[in-house]
Length: 304
Image (cartoon, rainbow, N blue to C red; front, side):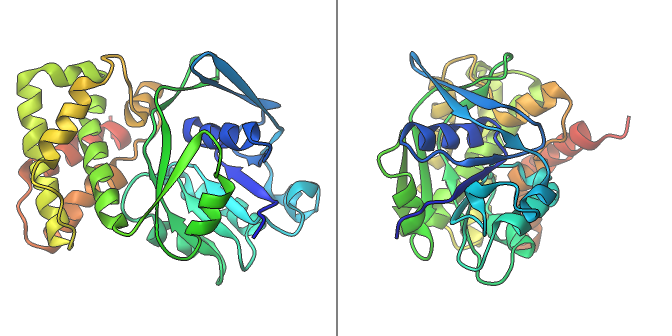
């Protein structure tokens, strides 16, 4: 199947990376988001990719047939808004999706399908993914990719279309037969990154031995909850994730820290709260997780 109509909803750091990958391969997507922009600028190595816009901000314009690029709906929609923004993005999903559209969800967490499916019509394929690349928004509005770009999607319906549309681009696609394990491993990584938001520090903070010990204990709790959910992670997962943080550039940030620095709501529930919620369902004690979740929730939502 040839995919001709592609949309990116939410051209932040992750969405811009996907848009740039597609544009550089001659598959320029239509762009939709909260902020009107004439183009997107993306930096990888010494290369600069400018993705032509505009970034449209009014779903009702699609209903009026203003955007001929996706007239009649999109074949593939990359949904790259944060989990806290799904409700706000719902009008785009209603305007862009038709019965056979594939919505590839580029979000954190292990509840992507459950959170997005209520906002699309019957017959739309909601495909979760794991995003494995460090893309960061720069002060001038550009996005810089600081590593290889890779997505993991579950084998099954819709996976072949996502692999096809990104084939030959700077973003590789891995189709996994054990997607839950991949998703939970990334959840553990994201959960630990929440400590960066709490400390207000970048990846270099994990070189503190006391924080490393806390991180390891937290990740071991998360792995126990994953096992209760039927996902067995390898025995060294906690040490492996911690080693990844400690080997990263000391100034490497994460989206939840960026959001805290900007005063935006944090994705604390899908990245951290989910562990405590699922632990309670299985009567598993998770004291570190519960403390981290409480502090992130208060940091995000107040009051005070």
